[in-house]
Image 1 (cartoon, helix red, strand yellow):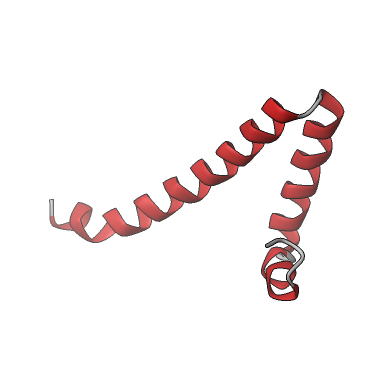
Image 2 (image 1 turned 60 degrees about the vertical axis):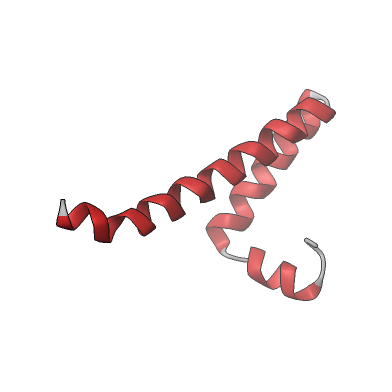
Length: 63
């Protein structure tokens, strides 16, 4: 029980991170067509893997 108490913030952080990504992909799929969803998912994955996302937020592109 003691280890779960200390690992709970990390578990919640990872869960919320993936839920935010899931929500944005679902929202893009709801408002757009299949081609837009594929493009958004590919771009989102590429930016998260290469870690350019924080720089885009800094530059105001992803605001």
